[in-house]
Length: 125
Image 1 (cartoon, rainbow, N blue to C red):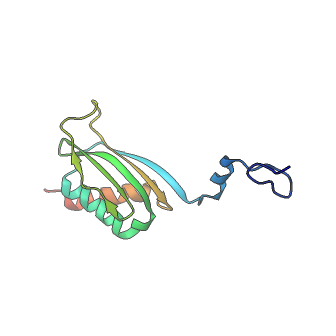
Image 2 (cartoon, rainbow, N blue to C red):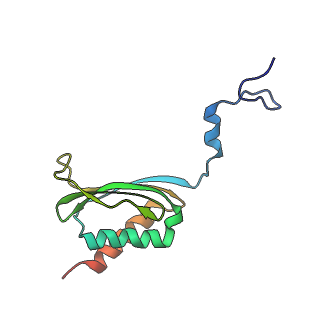
Image 3 (cartoon, rainbow, N blue to C red):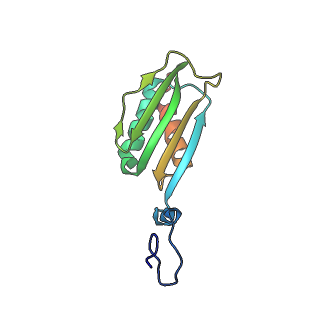
């Protein structure tokens, strides 16, 4: 009689959940929040710098940004980003910028540092 989904030499059945062991252990998910609103220049420049330096390691980016008080949705994969969408209203009382990054080998601290550094450089006054 045959086995279902293979049976290796130690006769341990393989289930679909075992495929998770084959993923790269460098894949990380980071959820970041920024209290202060961004200018569009600061937000887009930060994403552009991150994409230029580590785009191939950005497996997924999505979020809602506070751009000078307005909610703007962003999403992208590696070097490709969809055009941002400005919402008519905030979906909740939470007006913080919040983004999720799924990356290969990029720490949350690195991402935060880029946004803070670019924000400081692009700040007027």
